[in-house]
Image (cartoon, rainbow, N blue to C red; front, side, top):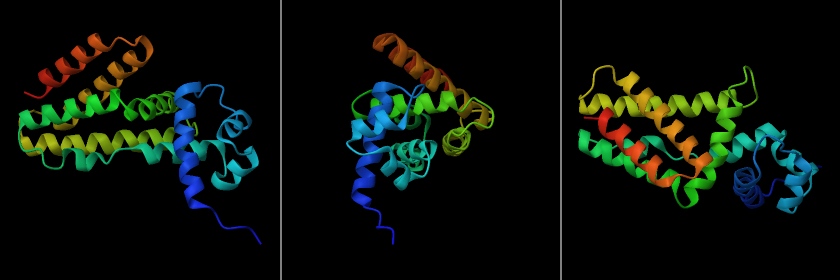
Length: 185
């Protein structure tokens, strides 16, 4: 009889996986070094998560903010700009950097057609687009809110990727601020 899953251990492993990807990258990820770093075995990781890809998707899912809650009470353009800025700051400092660094790598890997991360990335982007589109419709300040939401999300993701690569905090903060301010008037 198989032993039951230790849910506390599983949760701990998921958080550690995100930190590992953030520090070591996704490109050459192998279960054995990952397991060794986590103090477990690759066999146990497969037991808990099934596949390496499933492990990464589940780990990132634990880090995804509740986007609907972030924008739920936005009632005007100024509040939306401020909320987007707060979201940017949370994504680029503190614990947010670790999960964003890992997520950015997985979204990049999802560009491979029919890749193992495509569904996760598509879902993450769709949730953000729908939620931000709804917020833009609520404040009724832009034509074609879905396109504006796409510009904001894709633009901020691109600036974020620039920041992760170059470490240029000042320039990328200014670029994010300008994108937000000029897009949501």
